[in-house]
Length: 177
Image (cartoon, rainbow, N blue to C red; front, side, top):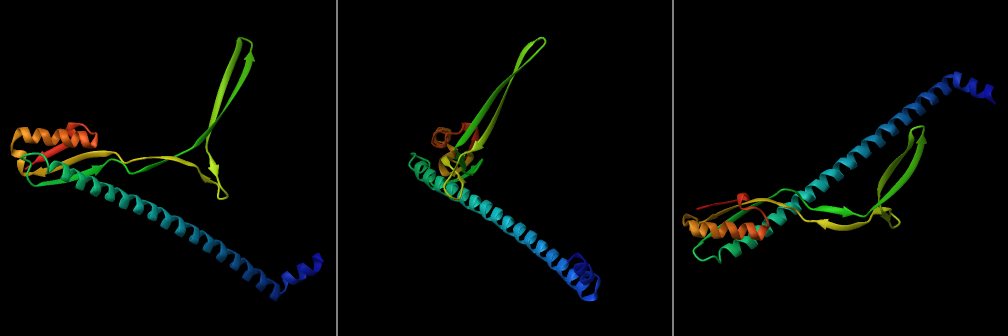
């Protein structure tokens, strides 16, 4: 059997089959690598695009609500608000921590060591991580343009209202007319 295989491979037809087979394997390997990289890259782009769209939507919603609130301040006049976010929404997953204690004794006494390993808890047939919560985006700062900002009392009311509504410091609020 081995001799027949050796004779076949040494013949012209066997050499051609071997070369064609090797080339086919190489082409398949290259195609699988390209398709994996391509799908992973587009998935990452989709995720980051979704995160950007979500952040923009949150900013616009906060801006509209804050404009409505500030326009009710006596003397504020026409109000325009811009909000910037420090981070996007963050998902929180359930974690399982395993801790191992081991003790080793030597001539001078005993010494102990502790090691821990944290893993995400998986569920379902797809073995996806178990999501237990969501951390909402944090506001970096706000800029307010309004007609009443010339008056220092109204300006202070606007700054305090924005800082309180967004739970940020007054130093992160800029008000101008």
